[in-house]
Image (tube, rainbow, N blue to C red; front, side, top):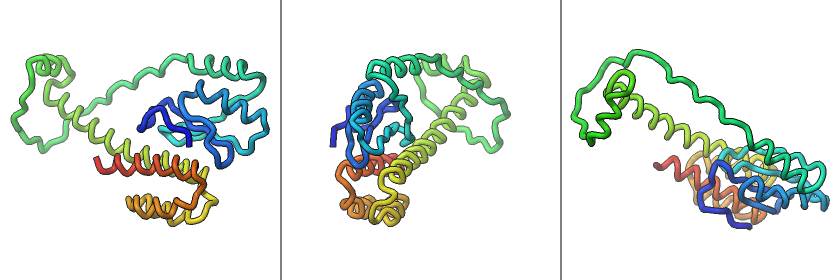
Length: 200
């Protein structure tokens, strides 16, 4: 199996498969040439996964490799979506007063936030809690999407899926050992990442 740019996947890294064999991993531009070459050679069942989300990406492989890369460069040049404004609302009752120790620069920043320091701290805590839950759910969904696409027809898929959602990595690893090497390695990496996120 080809190594990934780093142990943890970034939001902008991808992994490409030709049937059961991994053919490339890295940035989209970096793998596009490998995918186009495999396509031109008649490789079966080309799949490109977003490592962060597990979603399949459809590449427009018409024309030459330069044509493919040019279209990718154009599609990546869009402007970012505007951030959504923060919602309004009164803080919930049941507040417990406790001491918080911060540096002067922290107090200065908090004093400029809407609703004052207490409201800003509550928002930051709530955002961190939601982000943690969302990250676990997103890594689980990413791993499951890839499992279905690559291993849905392989032996022990259903039992492996149950072990995954039960958080039993040893059982999952044992059940997935019979899968083709590249598929097993990639899926196990995603599953391990998800289970690690759930333990944080």
